[in-house]
Length: 478
Image (cartoon, rainbow, N blue to C red; front, side):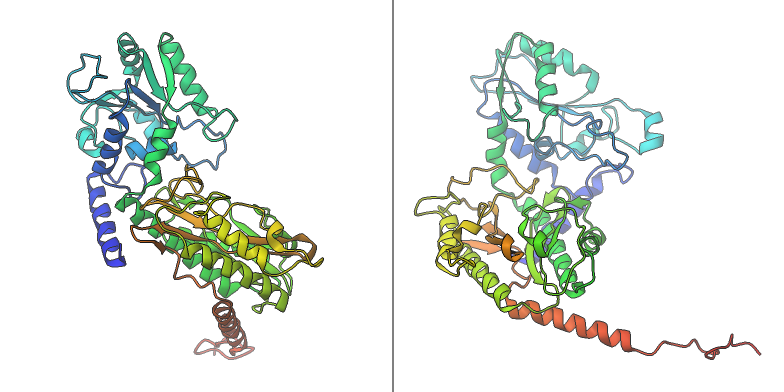
């Protein structure tokens, strides 16, 4: 999609939001049209033999005063709803053999809390089941009060032996304890049913981004690119890591980002070799290399961009050697991204192997050993509503996927870490580097940093401006 088409789609998204009351405090600033969410729900329910029951977050997942509500990602993906205490039931479609109920009307039911004027005085307006025009605003024809959820589940459990929801991981990772609480609630409300997992079905849908999702992701990438450029221009010895991170976060927020896609990583010197260093506690020194892995989120969608900079604006010969190896490995891997390739660590379709083999065949450590052992992570991951969106890295790429390509070399004994990361859209014929406008070339980076340093020096050397009517040492009075 070219930028003119993307701009047009963004305008459509903005117009589609005109039907949503501006007083609604928690909805995303922008979202996809209701039809996009409805299409996903229809696909999900088309091959299931029982009701799908999903509960959104309650808003009580955290007690911190800094907590800002953000919906559970799978629930948001299917509803576009970013307010607390909502639920969704999807039923097998009319005409399918799986249908066993006698429900009339729509095959999807959305549950919203009743109106609570007292709560809204504190937290702003919320969507409620009885609001005028709520069907058009949410995209659901059947909306019921949240207190009716249990009775609806109990009724369905009389005719359906299988229910579907998102089961907790075996390990206590993403979604826990929300997913466990949902399953426990279902088993209490309908103890006779067999609860099955719908996670992988939703993950398969999330893998391929819709045109409107890509509009939002392009904006997230644009803000990340702008923040990285600001960091290049301000970078110099004497700054603290947190000051650079703060400038980048400010750039995101000014551009409309509602949150960071992940905790900012700005690692200088020895911290450049820690993959997810986020303490931001070191003063940047002359000669340091600085890894900046900082990504904006825009209307729920993440970006994930990394650049590595010389603190003083000039790479040392060794820093440049390692940087060029990583850059060429990344270029080789990006060039190979197309439908049918994958990120598995083995096989003749692996873009990971392309990057690893290049790194392992070029350059040496202090002991004369190959550098492959210092490429200690995978080549990339899917990006979307989560910076690490669900997706099997060994499955072939398909058009519409967005993945990162991020090779790195980390040499702790040299206080030297280099990672370069870009967001890549898989297209029908190959790929598009969404973050392609952000410089990666050594000469380009050094030129930007040198010009910025020159501009700072010139500004510092300007004579102080004396207001008209005043004289040095005087108050300008008679």
